[in-house]
Length: 166
Ligand code: ZN
Image 1 (cartoon, helix red, strand yellow):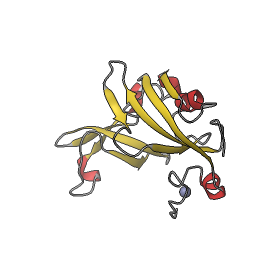
Image 2 (cartoon, rainbow, N blue to C red; image 1 turned 90 degrees about the vertical axis):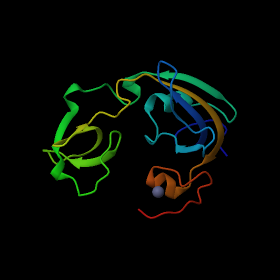
Image 3 (cartoon, rainbow, N blue to C red; image 1 turned 45 degrees about the vertical axis):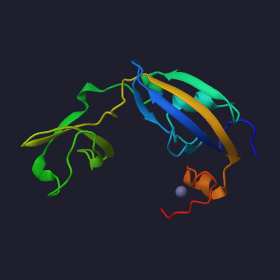
């Protein structure tokens, strides 16, 4: 078993993410911990870098700048899509994420920011783009990745036994 976090190690962490005003944006506390594969872009680069070399039991507190988080906010990232382009009964609400093919045929994630009678207003920026991310992380467990996890670039659950097809 690996003793410190390095590339290709499966890591289970408990985390809390706050914004700069201290508001909790996301947390695993009271829920399932997060299991990820180090070195495979499963988590934002700034957090991954901060966790490299840590051991089980370590607590890491880090402020990740936007450049190492969800990127800077691109002001040209907003679009209006006609409501008719969405399926009947689609639950169009601010915060909804979906994927769409753009003019250049690149498939990108989009987030709904507002809905009116005529248009769905979407943003190509991640909702946390431009934000400094304040993480507090407790490292719970490390293990070696299984060959199929390395091939997929992500872990199959905390123990590697969560099989799936994709
Ligand atoms: Zn997989």
